[in-house]
Amino acid sequence: MKQRYLALLSAGHFFTDVNQGALPALLPFLIVEHNLSYASAATLVLAANLVSSVIQPLIGHLADRKSMPWLMPAGVFCAGLGLAFTGFIDAYWLLFLSVTVSGIGVAAFHPEAARLANFVSGEKKGTGLSIFGVGGNAGIAAGPVFITAALLLWGLKGTLVLLVPVAVMAAFLVLALKSLQFHPAPAKKGPAAGTAAVRDEWGAFGRLTFVIFGRSTIFYGLTTFIPLYWINILHQSKAAGGTALSILLFTGAAGTLIGGRLADKYGDRQIIRAGYTALVPVMLLFLAAGDATLATLLLVPLGLCIYIPFSPTIVLGQKYLPNRMGLASGVTIGLAVSIGGLTTPLLGWIADHYGLGTTFAAIAAVPVIAALAAFTLTPPGRTPRLAAAAGKS
Image (cartoon, rainbow, N blue to C red; front, top):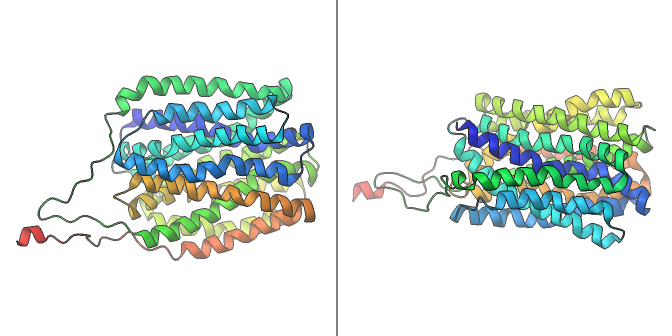
């Protein structure tokens, strides 16, 4: 494991995803400032993820052909740039455009960074990818704390501070580009004589993508509406709503690291199944919690169950598509994850018409489907795509 490169990639992941975590905590302030409905606010989350969900697999596909490490500093900077200007915008369509720019930046960073993280992790890919994942999850967790503090100090224009960390991180990545280019995308070559190439398993990868889509729906549903739930249902302050979100996400960051280590020991599929199965009763208990103290305590097991399967799904996806790791990373970190944001306007519509309690009941139904789908995942095949015919001829 090449720890220096892994630390750099994890730091880049942190500062990119700070902006993903900041957006949900920013929504209550935007709702008050611009008199937005729940559906309109949730659509901003859609804007940050719609373009991202399409772009990431395309970038991953290109990364399989040619290494493009310059996308990482560019992505980090754009992720912060788009969100930084939301505090200075009055028109809703400009808000939509700004968060879309942030989503494009997030999309540009992830596929190439995840492919390189797989490379530098060596034999301990579960642990290595979990360290990389912790960087992003810790960034998402730090986002609400960072942006809430800035907005309480300076008002909505405090979003401008988001430019500072991304500019510094982008500069570090630019300085490291030459070193990162020592790890180019693997050339597409045929198997040597007497050897066999492992085939890409698209059916298994498709089922895994469905499982990740379920997790993504849960993740975006909770991160979008937990601050609003704390304020409007549990009658807590905006700061308490941001703190609740951070507890969930920081616990999740720890869960990511735990999940990677467990996957190296017990197997990717076993940990994925265990995480989603345990999530079902935890979500039901959270739904039944009637006060802020109990709900806050339940955020810890909730975060662990959501995040423990995170890095095993990335590793398993790369195992299902061993010849297209960039594409696999773009889908498992990008498309399948970001597409969960597409459900947030629907959840916002439910909240507008039936209340936030009903919205959380809808979210609680998703883990059941995800858990059942997780049990359809098969072991990564060892069937050779090309028999060792060359050695026989």
